[in-house]
Amino acid sequence: MLQTMRDNAQGIIAKVIVFFIIFVFALWGVESIVSLGGGTPATATVGDQEITEADILRTVEQQKANLRRQFGDQYDENLFNEKFLRESALEQLIEQKVAVVQADKLGLYAASQAIDETIVTIPAFQQEGRFDKEQFQNVLRMNGLSPLTFRASLAEDIKTNQARAAFVLSSVETPFSVQLSEALNNELRSFSFYEVNAKNLEAGIELSAEDIQLAYEANKDRYKTEEQVRVQYVQLNRADIAAKQDVTDDELQAAYIDYQSRELAKEQRSSSHILIEVSDDRSDSDALAMAKDIKSRLDNGEDFAALAKEFSDDIGTKNAGGNLGLNTKGSFVAEFEDALYALQPQQISSPVKTEFGYHIIRLDDIVVPSVKALAEMQDELSREVREGKAEAVYAEQMQELSNISFSAESIADVAKALNLKLQDTAFFSRLNGEGIALNDSVRQVAFEENVMLDKQISEVIELQDGALVLAVSEYKDASVKPLEEVKDQVVANLKRERALAQARVVADAIAGGEEQAADWKKVSATYQQSSEAPRLAQQKAFALTVGQTDVVKTPGGFTVVTLDAIDAKNWQDMVLSDEVKEAGRAQNSRADMLSYQAWAKSATNIERSGS
Image: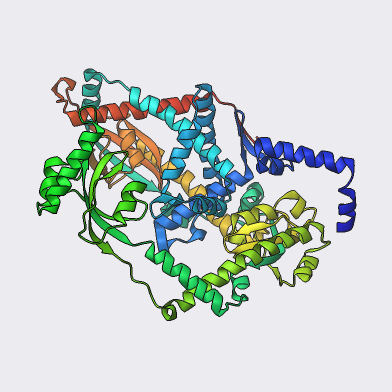
C-alpha cells in the first residue's frame, strides 16, 4: 500500500495537491489544513460565532478542575450532576460569545502587541519569573489548545474587557441618586415568615405501581444512559523508552561537565558603582575628567559610599553607597559586565564608559554556588542522559506510529508492527472515563464520527507522558434504563414533586387564612443584610406593603411572608462619605453592565441544536 502511495505521489494531481497545501499553510498555518478535514458540528451558534461539542467538554473539564481545587480531598465527582455541569458550561459559553459578538459590532479590536504583552505576563507560561516558550507550548498542549486558538481566545477576552471597562469607567452618579440609594439600602423592614418544608411531607405520600409506571414513562429522558465506547489503543510512553536507554561513562562525564557549567553560570557578584552622566550641562570630556578625579580620590583612601552619595548620578543607588546588590551574569550592559568580571573582590575599576555615562565599579563579593560531586549527581545525570536520548527515539517512533497507523488495516497490526502492547479500556462516555479516557482529547477523538462509527484508526493523540492511537472496539448507543434499575430514582423524584405540590397548597392556605401556623418567625433586616429567613423570603418582604401576605418558593419548599412594619430613612439625612460615593459608583457600574448584558443577549441571534 505504501509503495502504491509513493508511485501515485509522482503524478500531476499529487503535485497540485502538494502546491495547494503549501499555499494554504503559508497563509494560514497548519491549523487551516487540519480544519479542512471537518470538525465537530456546532452545538450552538451565537451570531456568527459557533460553540462546538469540544468547547463544551473543555469548559466542563475546567469546571471540574476548579471544583477539585476548591474542595481538595473532599472533592467527589459523583456529587456533581453531569447534565447540570454541561448546561452550565453551554450557558457560560453563550454569555462569552454574546460579549464577543457585541464587541465586534462596537468595532473593538485587540492589537497583536497587546496579545503578546498579555501572554508573556501570564504566570503559567513563565519559568523563574520569565516567559518560557517551551512552557507556553506544553501548557497549551496539556489543555488541548494550539497557540493560534489560544491567541484568538485571548483576543476575544481583551475585546470584551474593553467593552466592560467602557461601562465601569463611564458610570456617573448624582448626589441625589446616591443619597436615595443609601436611604433605600438602610431601610429596615420587620416581617414574619413560615416555612413549609416539602421534605417533611414526603413520608405521608403513598404511590401505586401505576403512579410509578406513569412517572417513568413521562420522564424517560431522565433515566437514559449516555452513549459509550470501548477502545483498543497502542501507546508510546516516554518513560518506558527512557528506561531502555544505556548511559556510557563518557556520556555521564559529559553530562557532569554540563552540570558544572550550569551551576557555575549561577555565580552571583555583589558590586557598587558611581555613575557620572554625560548631559547637556556636562560634556563627555568633563564627565571623564570628573570620573578620573573620583577614582584618584578613591585610590587615596576616601570612602566609596561617601563619594557615591556626593557625586553619583544614579539616584536609585547613590544613597545606598552605590550598592547594586547581587546579580548573575547578563544583568548589566556588556561594557559594565566585562569590567566587573575582570575585577577581584574589593578592587575598583578605572572609569568605564557605557551608554549611561562613566562608571567607577567596585566588586564587593563573589558568591559561588556549590557544585556536587559526580557520585552525588550520578543518578540524576543518568536520568537526564536517558531522557535526552529517549527524545530522539520517541520522535522517530512517533513518526513511525503516525505512518503505520495511517496505512494499517487494524489497531492490532499497528501494535504488531511496532512491537507494542495492544491495550483495552473499559466503556466510557463523552464526559467521563477512566485511565487514558480521563483525558479530554482521548474522549473527543474516540467520539469522532470516522473513529466511532466507521471504526477507523485515530490520528496520533499526544499526552503529557507520550502518545497513542486508538480504535473503537465496541459502541453502545444511548438507551433508557429499565424501570427495575431506576425505580428508586423514579419513586424519589415523584415523591419530591408531589410533596412540593402539597407544600404549595399548605402555604397558600396559610396565606389565605384557611389554615393556622403556630411557629411564625420574626425578622428585622435591611435588604442587603443576612438573616435567618431564606434569602428569597427576605426579598419578597421588600416587595410587599405593610400587612400584606404572600407566598414565595424557597429551596426547601414554600415560605409564607407577612410584612409587619417599615422603618424608612429620609434620603436628605444621608451623609455621603468618599466610601459611600465610590460604592454608589460601583453599584451603578454593575447595574449598567448587567443591563447591557441583558440587552446584548436579547439583541443577539442564539440558536441551540435541536431547538
